[in-house]
Image 1: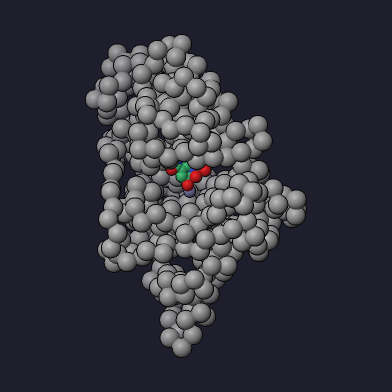
Image 2: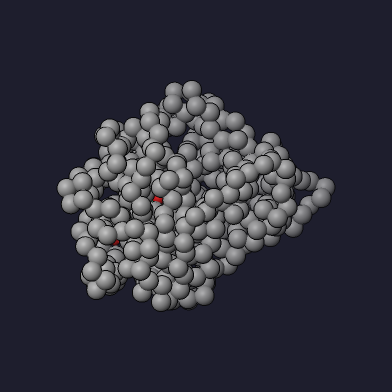
Length: 393
Ligand code: NZQ
Ligand code: ZN
């Protein structure tokens, strides 16, 4: 068993009354002048933004608002946030939204206290030593950014989507009220669950899978998500199932299902090129790639895929033919994706054929011109990544 460090410092306030705690939590973590950061319309429409602002106001906490974060959050919005925080001497960032708003908040947090260009962190040219504290009011369970150390930003100059990970950006607190997710459209709900399951799958398919407790937690999470999403697609106001999904989103990415086993992450990195280039929903992009990735790599460890097929996808184990069982697990996942309205290839994702030039471009960017292999379950060079894009066409 490998040694590991587990670090999940985020305070979680979960439930229907959780938003009442927002001002108290901001104060607890040192916020006196707050940037309230949010997305497009959903937090305005639901009244959540007003509710949070009036809580801050009643507590005498100064705040300024910056909305307009889009899915696949843009670097230009980050620059805007940095300028506003500096100008108004803001010392805390409150993200109201999902992964995009939270990631934008983290990037602003890095940038405010850094003299150079914040994009340098994402390019790997510099490492952040400070970050303005971030708090979260979560509205969509998906990315897991509310407890993670990651931030993923798109530079619109070239459609370059890059992640940067650093423990110092982990949110101080996350407020999670499952009722706030009742308004999620079916597509976002399904893409969110796909992402949640994939954060666990990326960790589950790794070369050092030797911890039974971690595997069992991971499998329970992946089984539960399949049931929960079908229930909420039938009844969007099913509190119990919305709550399970919301909590699973955090557990799937705060490393409870991985314990620092350095998962695979090839599907994620191959997908990031899709959402960078075509501006698609991250979770849907993962569904379009995973089946092809799985068929390309499963022979590296057939028994792992058999275990996944049987324990997660409910496939009957054909002991005489492990490969057939493994492949039936992948097919079962494809059926599940279709059942919840997710694509299983790029054509279904973007509504047209991806061109060979686009595949070449994504392959080059994903592997940094074949200098950066992807994945750990199987080490993928540029030719492998290209083959996976071709299979996923
Ligand atoms: O902008 P608004 O109007 O709020 O609409 C949003 C957005 O269009 C909508 N939405 C959110 N809450 C809602 C709602 N609509 C109705 N009711 C609600 N309660 O949902 C849409 C998607 O929001 P977004 O924040 O983009 O979703 P998600 O949480 O899936 O975040 C995706 C981003 O996170 C990154 C992805 O790459 C992508 O850029 N990731 C971040 C990670 C991390 N920081 O750890 C890890 C992930 O693997 C992922 O890469
Ligand atoms: Zn993800």
